[in-house]
Image (tube, rainbow, N blue to C red; front, side):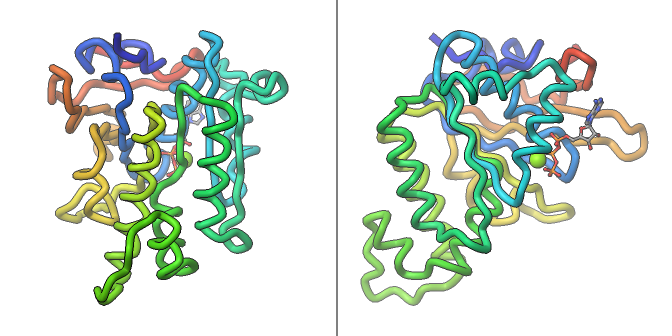
Length: 240
Ligand SMILES: Nc1ncnc2c1ncn2[C@@H]1O[C@H](COP(=O)(O)OP(=O)(O)OP(=O)(O)O)[C@@H](O)[C@H]1O
Ligand SMILES: [Mg+2]
């Protein structure tokens, strides 16, 4: 059984929804619709009585709740019921190691079906700044005698996070900012290889039209064509 995406018309593009226990990267530029996509994703599970965890940073919680409402996504109702655990972290005051520990405990206590991290780009950026060797230790990755470059630290944090999500057989969306005019899809240049799937959201500047493309999805017979995407009053809809 696959997992419904919650985005109208998108399960067909995926070849019948997301494969179970997939860790999927959602990439796109600013305003591409990454957070709205993620809201639909968690809401789909919540409507079916499942639990979800949503991590957000940089004071985005309020915006997220307000924006969701405009598309008929009532996350507040599920926060009140305790079925949605929506956590907002201020990265200037929180250590990434504590966030990982907190996530682990939250997963063990609540057994969520879906987890969203909005965004992985922010998290891995702070891995570099605040945590250092401690991140690798907390994730059971021994620093050994390697020279810790910022690349190694960021990769260590992302690998550790993905391994943890895999251990608990979580369905996850990790949101990443897309690097414009760059050879790689994400700013960090490795997350797209580590995750099971990559969904790209884009806006064609010349026409102002939105598109959604499944760049990669392990264990799925999906197409690779960009599909038109619209933000209607009822939310995100994939057109033919
Ligand atoms: N009510 C609405 N109707 C139509 N489009 C909307 C509406 N509200 C927001 N949008 C569009 O959605 C965009 C925001 O979507 P979203 O927050 O999901 O983007 P994002 O990819 O997460 O951006 P960021 O990288 O800045 O976090 C807005 O820039 C706007 O174009
Ligand atoms: Mg966003």
